[in-house]
Structure formats: structure tokens, C-alpha cells
Length: 174
Image 1 (cartoon, rainbow, N blue to C red):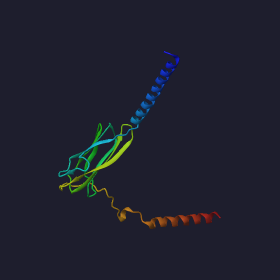
Image 2: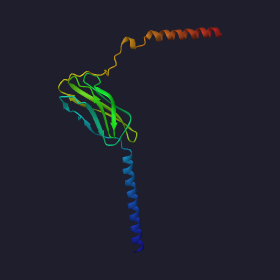
Image 3: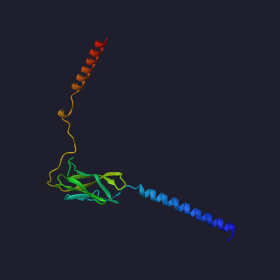
Image 4: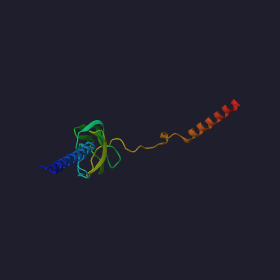
């Protein structure tokens, strides 16, 4: 082999090694930063059901952490229809359901922590086409009543009292 042929072969080998290293780095970095991806739901998104499910679940592409998992189902009436705490097993999160009631769209809200520690959340809906006899859980709407609010006169009175006390204190100092 001549000197120029060896130099060319060495250059090609070096170039191949650099390209392989860069491609490997990019691919592994992309995989390391990937978060859990929702693969499937039960019932499926936009399903039309005549009978409500006893449990809803979401399956992801990787193991989920069991901490801080959340899953609730809210019905067309604004009430919670899921029952109990969500369960995480491997790549699946699920929650039990109350027997459903009104016809309409039920939205499943989920929040999970992926294996890399990132929080992934989302929703999907299914529709009940035949009314059930179920009793809803608590409402998701927080009603505001007069007893829940602090009266404005309380703030105005406190402000007047503060200004008066400051005036008396300033007058005594002089």
C-alpha cells in the first residue's frame, strides 16, 4: 500500500468513527430525554358506550413512578365519577369507577411521572349513550357563597385603624 493510499484509508476510518460517534450520541441523547408517551386507553378515546366501565386505564410506553399519580373522571354534570385512588402497575395507571349516571361525555384526566422524573398529563373522553342509575361523587365546581368571602368592610376598617394608629404614634413622638 502506498503512503497516499494509507493516508486515505486512515482518513476514511477516522471519518467513519467520528460520524458513528456523533450519530450514537444524538440517538442516545434523544432516547434519554424521551418522556412517557400514551400508547392506549381503556375505554378508547371517543368511544360510545351503552354501559359505563368499572375501571378506566391508560397505558404508556415506559414504566411509571407510583408517586404523585392522579386520575379522575368528570362527567357531563361536572361531578367526579371515578372512585378510589389511582393504581400504577408498571406502565399502566388505572382508577375504579362508580356506576355512571347521565348520558354525555365523560373526561378522564391523568397525571403520571415518567421513569425519567418528568410529569406527563393529559385527558381523553368517552361518551355514555344510555343513562345509568349511578350516584355521582363530589362536584368539581366550587360554589361561592356569601360565607366563603371576607367582607370588604373588614379590610376598610383595618386600613382606617392602621392609619389612625400611625397618626397617634407620629403625634406622640413630636
